[in-house]
Length: 218
Image (cartoon, rainbow, N blue to C red; front, side, top):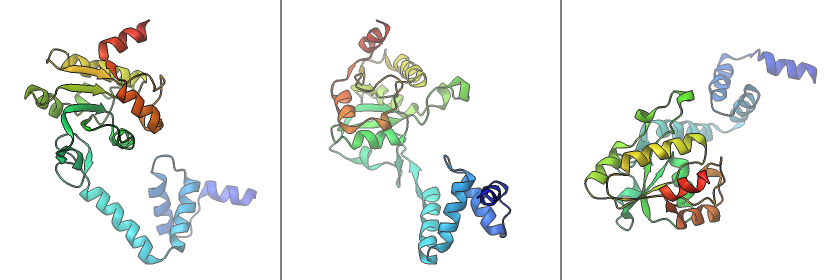
């Protein structure tokens, strides 16, 4: 047992190809070298056809998945399926951090507007400033009069609240309704971890942004 543990720590590989595979897999978030070794050895036991299919899917993921030019969502085309869908309410825009939040909201089946995916939250500690946010396409839609309401659906963390306030300041004098999701999402929570029913209610019972800020202060 001690020998096995020492081996895993030392990682004295008998194959440079195995070592390279472990290094690459271990570079993925949440995967340590021990797990990477287990996955690499598992792939060695799989049929070549299956491994080739996995490799091809990863190359396609990198080469063919794009950001929607309109909202920043992930898409195989220049404009994503949500933005292209004529049955969606293009005058209603839900501002979220990333594609995982889009998926979480879409899974509720209760939202019929479109999205603006910022791609990040303002976090000075991580070197992320306002210029890093994908906001320009939304400002263009607002200036063209295409948007009537913007829902700020960002995580209730310090970074999420800071980003929401920044977006609010950019939009507050542009003649549209600014709202935020109701506090069914607990403070400190992220949208992607909320259950579908709670998230659906939070969007349906959204509040004017100014009212939400006042409630947080009281």
